[in-house]
Image: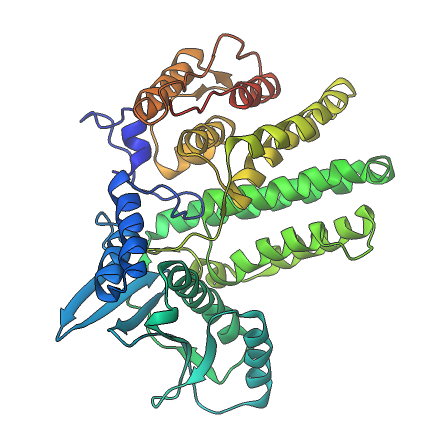
Length: 440
């Protein structure tokens, strides 16, 4: 079982939960041993012990639970493989240089259109570049001499190679017919039943939000901020709860970029763009979306590490906005605001581990039907009624799972409201806001 099962004490023989992943991968939750390996790697590099430095570096990078990093040493050279999504990054390091390559796509022809696209991508990259190998595979390549290859640089370069290769393959293949996958053996297929539940969840939620906007008519158009909450909450919720890959993931990221880009467009104009993006997603063939629902192993996260202060500031800035909508009969918008807060934090940041676990619990409560459809046996909501005892029990389990690293972490559940989802959502985020994450 995953770590969420352990958190909620769900290892009882009569309560076995499905092994399903949620949310964007983050590499921020390292063990004390891994952090020590990083410090020693930096020390060894500064002493000129390059191979020793890189051995320790890969100890820092690896996760023994998922075996995402493999290293072998022969004749004074480290040969390594790193897994990132659908890609395998291969390379070597010796006392002279470090070289890394990740195959992205295979091509039948050097088409001008996609070559131009790759050149444009090259300008965005700081450490690596695209190259054509002897097998006609387009790869992302990075090379450096060891004297200039500190652990800091190697980490950043490997992350760029890995995340670029993993993200671009599906996008390029759908855009250009001459391109093909190089290897799909790294993908772990999920069951058809799980895909059906996720697909239904995606379609139902898009349909619901677009109908809410349409039925709101001109009156709702007077509140572009309200529509934005609905549209953004929808995207972040789909991203976290279904963790799509390929074009569906890119569509959600594009929705995020479109709204927050500083391009001079008004909120109303941006809402219209987001609305059209969701309409396009509705029209995508079911089979195409099914292809983008699978499980992978990752080494590098794409979310930015953020202290709890960032979450506190975000809650303080957004949560009060729900009051007016609740008081004026816009309950669906009032509930979208805390959903937007939770979704944005999980989409954009690698928040501290206990905070992430609490935000996951928020979704388990507010999207209880979805978790039930996936096969989870939580009883946080029964017949529309919130189970106070079970929710508090789950919070206690999270506290116990983190008390060693965060001894002052003790969520105050006394002010939680269980009258309805809106009141619960507000009180739950205020509880998260007031957490003490001091480590000593």
